[in-house]
Image (cartoon, rainbow, N blue to C red; front, side, top):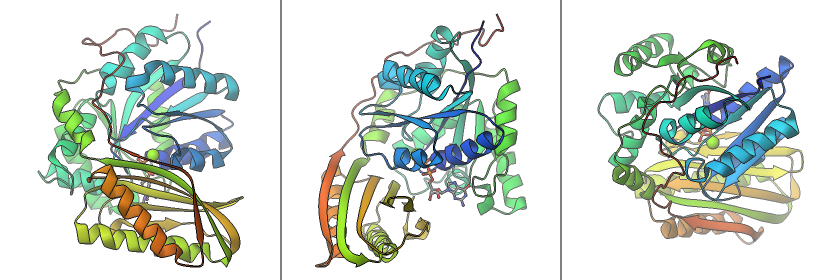
Length: 371
Ligand SMILES: Nc1nc2c(ncn2[C@@H]2O[C@H](COP(=O)(O)OP(=O)(O)O)[C@@H](O)[C@H]2O)c(=O)[nH]1
Ligand SMILES: [Mg+2]
């Protein structure tokens, strides 16, 4: 008999809201009695997303060191591992935000080789409404032109486009944006979703079950431009332990991120995404910057204590060396003389040229036949 575990790929550019959607969708699915497994992905370990998602109490596997497309076996092994461990009804996987060409490199090989193990869902791509509106109007949303190229390619190959963070726009703005997206990408099902309010998420999950549009298009794509769009980003993943007598960690995170955001504005730095997670046992704070200082958001609160752990993931349009220097400097300044900072893991890099394991030239039919 055919297996019924559904695999959902939720892609989209850095900061689009993928991880937050995975978190919210997991909660909603669990309320409905569904067993969920998640798979995260990054070029390096020490992933904020993984630590954050583990707090949903679901099974999370991480593919790190390479993107799903360049390590297809690592990806499918993780999916099957989560499937088994969680006895999952649904697995949601989040590819790296600067990845595209997923229809050719993931969707088609999945349809051809994993059709018996998994029910493959349409390729869903999230887009931040503010970035999306600017880019559809011919702007760059503060990004390098080659990064904008990736952003557009992600939408071009999608089966579903999710306009994320719908709560940030009023109804009129949202309707106008949706109309524009539908006109630009007429083949895609376009939905507005908000992980903050829950809007559109159940509808999205329901529509995935009935849609037969699953990896329907293969992109025409220039890999040199794609590679440049990735290579303009410096990448930093680090975890430090912090020690300071009865420290107010809420203030620490706020000061750290405000200082960092000020430097970003001063340097007019193009930010893909900077996110931090400060953890003290059960309690945690998350902080995010997805552009200029105006995008800074901090959630959660923790009590005062002597120890904390801070994980930092940053992707910004500077060399990894300068990114490393900047973050270390701001961290040192925030810590001052009272807080001792010890590095647990720290890595900075520039993504290499994308070399996918598979690249299908043609769409595979049929998918998910009921045999
Ligand atoms: N207002 C609002 N903010 C959101 C929503 N979803 C995500 N965000 C914020 O967008 C930023 C990036 O989210 P994240 O899920 O980490 O994005 P990812 O890089 O695509 O995984 C964070 O600051 C989130 O809090 C949403 O539905 N509404
Ligand atoms: Mg994420």
